[in-house]
Length: 465
Image (cartoon, rainbow, N blue to C red; front, side, top):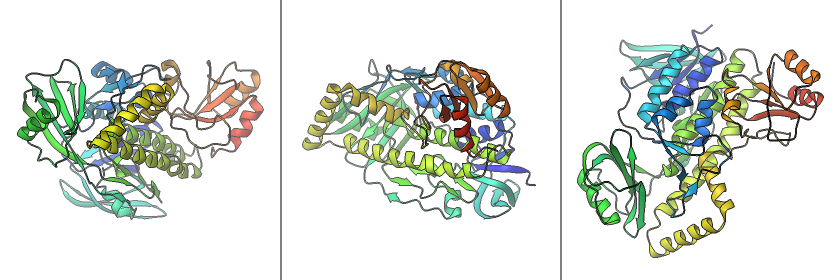
């Protein structure tokens, strides 16, 4: 038996959450991270409603709420028609401005509390797999070594060594436009977060924790990320540069868009940026990655501990790959709108903004897309795969990371079913007329029925042991 049933490569948010889910499910995960120390820069800032729900399902949301700045709206392609999150069907109708650095610190604390082992300064250089497991070639502080586990999860970013070593294709498009970013202090910040868009480019200026602002956007000419270029670009677009100084991070990013052909190859899985790369429009990247981890973690733990059949692992690709396809499509669409600085492009933007304002349902649909509240997985029952629009208290019922039965009123037959299937049963109000539902650990409906018999029949079709 291998010492570790899963090795997670990468100690970013996706790798940490994957490992925590595995440990919660009774596993023995090991995280290998090539960097000796965590990056001080926060690539991601936005934590969306669905991700806060994911955190709440494990009782981890409060520290994020305490340390984040709630923003009640978002945008699609920087259109001048904000997406109002306040009416969304979630107990967290806002996005949090929460630096990735702090996100990683909190997720690491959660993982360590569950017994996850993290080794920093260990770089994976290759892998091989057979029917017994996956062997990684690693270079650590004491030299090269090999280590074998039952499964490996590549959460090692867009340049994933795991993906390359496993022979998984990463088709897509290269960068054709570039955005800029600066985390700086401002002597003359705007009174409120805002954005500007005109023939000179696009600009967002928003406060971030620590008394700084993020100044980011797009300009038609490729920029060298310097403080002077940030000043010049901001002044050209907004008419003022807001007095940037004391930069802690200056960078640029492109619109390369790629999607792994397979999220699973044998015993190797991909999650987060290792599986999908895109322009950071709408701040969705970290969120989709954590939702990948949530989908994969409980399944892998359930199979490894004998609670589910191996067929469950096939559903990771079939459920999350379409999400990656949609992610690439809507971020490319947003990129087209953000970079639409020509006269015709700005007319398109005005037309689209008027359309969103005139049709609230369109605005709501876009908000649900950006926040991933509309994600549904395949299933035979009309309710199967739906996300439960749960209360915060209902989300907490999933804290143990196991499936649970929820019933409007549990009759003796439903109670007997719960006992025979070794499931926790909770009586709670459901948003549907059905009598009871079997909830997956990631907050989606796994099976449903108007009677205990119907529910039992639906559960019999699941890969449960």
